[in-house]
Length: 149
Ligand code: HEM
Image (cartoon, rainbow, N blue to C red; front, side, top):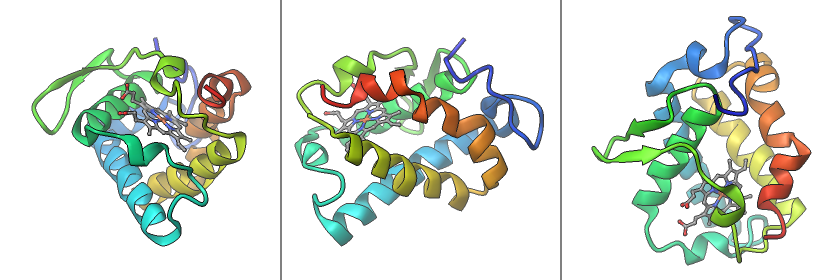
């Protein structure tokens, strides 16, 4: 079971994947990439740093993020994404962010200004953001696995 599988949504009493399902996770994942693009267009590297400018394969990144989120929030260990490829949800976040030197401020900005809007614009009410999504990404050890690597 993924680390967020035991978080219960206020709206349903079930975890996020059981509440929203695979299609919603795909929609949120695509919304995250749209928010990142909008942020980089509006503010350049000011808030998120330079790590996204070094990505060479956004299609794989997108599929891997989707699989990570699905598994982390209570879904299966792997998914077939919209590109028809299969991606594994169990991933090492330390290794994934190695060499990026993501700062605490960049991480917090990403959660508040990319992930939360991607969820709410996809129809997730704030009560569910707070109850069954946010606790995982604000967890100190989860944050520490991505910051400063
Ligand atoms: C809740 C916080 C975060 C989660 C759940 C998350 C999750 C992930 C996942 C699953 C991957 C794919 C792993 C791979 O491609 O091997 C990834 C890669 C990446 N992450 Fe994060 N991440 C988070 C925060 C951040 C932040 C704050 C930044 C930058 C400011 C960032 C920048 C990147 C970049 C640039 C890659 C792409 C690596 C590549 O494909 O070359 N991430 N992240």
